[in-house]
Length: 562
Image (cartoon, rainbow, N blue to C red; front, side, top):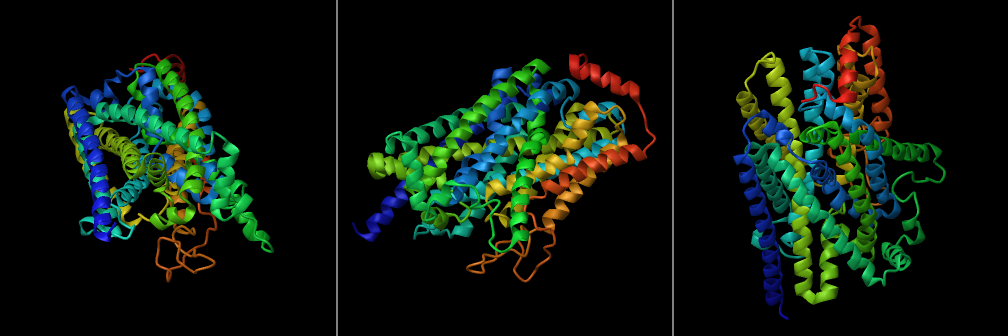
């Protein structure tokens, strides 16, 4: 076949794939329009009218939680780094053991946002402001991960990097264009559809994601005769690392011969990451707001239980995806397409389809899995943007600027405008961070959530003496420590490849402000956030035991939760 014919065939495959993705986008827009028709007031826009059952919300929570970091980032890390990539899956799953006992308490206590929980006890504007700041910061970091994943996905769909440049697009242009497109879509979903649209998008996305992952996992195992040992051996051989690919220490907690200090740093970095993943889930704003979409605390607990089952099944399947990609595609091809490994799953889908059904089979399976990945990204970014805009409108505008006397129509209007602002900021930041692994970006978001939000949630629910000063000190202390430590970490500067000397940090190589040796700040920032919350409380004379007793009764019984 001539080069021209091959190029034409490749172009038609990518066009066909993009057509399926366009069909998916059209379907999501239809869902958004239908949701808009039944959205009347703040309860509908913020909480979907509290009309979703535990089963529906469990599926929506699964969709919320299984983000691009799960589907693209974790599988890519397993494909490139073997066993160590699976550590993200373990942390993400174990985290739900902490969420489960909090789900019913949070639903009974809050109304729309995280700030409603401490706001019930401490009716001070400063509490709302602190919680809004933390919510927006965490959501924007998480948004970056989803949008970076979108850029990597569309680059693969267009065939950029495979020796061609369809539509005259260079790799950087394709990624940037994808990020902008996804950002515009997420703004439309939130501004027009609110929580009802976001919830139905999550439910649809969860079905597609679990189904697509199961299909790929079965196909991978079938190619190896359903022999997991054969799959692992093939992955280890293809990795070039041998048995080390299947053992701890290839990426995290690396033993450095002759350098005990660096070995200790590597092990602490692993512990810091695990701590952030486990503790951060219960404090993610878009997870918290999801519990307010059900009618009562019992349904909230039921939805958390169902989510644990769905999420557990998914993360078991990421093993097949990651090691399957390593064995069938190879780390070299994966890294050549995307150095962070974010395109490993789509590449695996194309390889399996080609082996089973020739070029047409490869095109069809790539299209299907890419559409699932795109649905994953679109649904999660809608929920994240909604969490941010809800906090800005309900907490900052409604309770601070308007002293709690804002009309529902005013709050909803501000929420829609806030979605535009938050979305625009996320687009700009994602363009700058598009070469980072999406699972790593999510790890940072989890660390910030655990350091800034978790102390406030836990101490509000369980400590009688906790007060306004404790909320402020906890939020700003945990948030400030997280951001400062990231700024001074190898993520931002001072990190280079020991072999090639390539700069691996965000800042240019001539800038080196690295002081903090860990890549994830959770190990230091989370205890610091709790310590700040306790210290701020003890230094303040504010006491209100009556409000605490009311909170305890409401959180346990649900009286007045509506």
